[in-house]
Image (cartoon, rainbow, N blue to C red; front, top):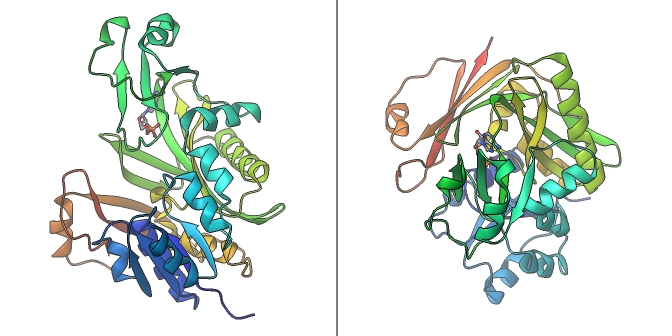
Amino acid sequence: MKNPILGIIGGGQLGSLLSVAAKKIGIKTVILSDDENAPAKNFTDKFIYGKYDNKSITQEFIDSVDLVTYEFENIPFNILQSINNEKTVLPKPEINNLIQNRLTEKNFLNDINIQTTQYVSIKHIDELKENENFFPGLLKTTTLGYDGKGQYKLNSKRDISNEIDFSKEYILEKFINLKKEISVIITRFGNQKYEIYEPIENVHEDQILKHSKIPADVSKEIIIKSTEWSKKIVEDLDYIGTLCVEFFIDKNDNLYANEIAPRVHNSGHLTINSHNISQFENHVRAVCGLEKIKTKKIYNAKMINLIGDDILIYRDKKFSENEFFFDYLKKDIKNKRKMGHVTIIEK
Ligand code: AMP
């Protein structure tokens, strides 16, 4: 069978790195983005710019691809569904719909007996006042929040202020004493068929991922549990493609699943250099129905995100043969914006 043409919704660094991985194995990509200057423009075979609800633009996109995937989860469900009526969308739109809302996502995890932090749905300021046992807590919008956006730390009832925008819905999560954060990246090809990467240890600064490394410095029990939970999640969702589960470990070594990303993930960038097959290539292989290749670690590695001005230093830097620099070629440098990354492998 001839290789399919893969449509990708979203043109950020994940779309770029998916395009690069696809090209390497002879798959052409078409990117649809609502940002005229999306960095993936520089890496894809064809770039289509337009709003996702513009029918003629999405039709042009649908007509130029064989199947569709996405690099971010905040795409309205009805748009993914209507694309799926014409060309297969993977992961399935229903999965995206379940996961893009923190409440349904956490309910799903608890329904399949995966531990999360304790949480409660908050739709009104009065509900916040009634749930004192969740303080100190983090109030998070149920949709559209990422990298700490749309979150309020509330130590007690006194912190409830008029600044909180109650036109939105929230969950209030009990604050835990964090020791470590890890993520597990898994690519599922079909029933009980998957490739799984070892847990990755992540450090955040200002709620943005700063460093990732393998191996994660965690106990055997944590490795086994996080791996088993991740397998359970993809099997239960009947997921196809790469998915990331972010976990918290508290000071008593309790493990909590925090978030599921139904896509490739920033913490998995190091797999480009540490493994024979990266999270991006595995995603492309899985959604395009290509052969599953045994994924093996070649090197331990560390990845550093280059945020804002960091990129300027790296653009002029000389690298050793163990260092791999990726510039996302974003048009403007902005504070707190991920501009590139560098991976250092341990030889
Ligand atoms: P999130 O948007 O849920 O990924 O949260 C962003 C970051 O805030 C996480 O990576 C943690 O560092 C921190 N955080 C989120 N929820 C909690 C919690 N319940 N307790 C302690 N820290 C948290």
